[in-house]
Length: 88
Image (cartoon, rainbow, N blue to C red; front, side, top):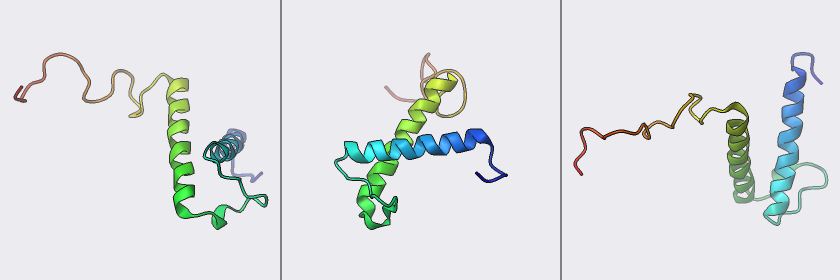
């Protein structure tokens, strides 16, 4: 581990790597044995990355009690009450 990285950063990276392999298996892609993902088509890597980002966001939201904007409370645009300035 690099001296500049905190231990929690190393744990986060390991968790993301495990989730990446798990998502690849869910998509029916056999993860590369040597760990080099460059041999896979960009579309497949993009699907894995998109699902990884979504799942990581869900995990972060669940752990922090905050929404994706980083604020507590309802997401922007869902503040309740009457909507002003719009024709209904």
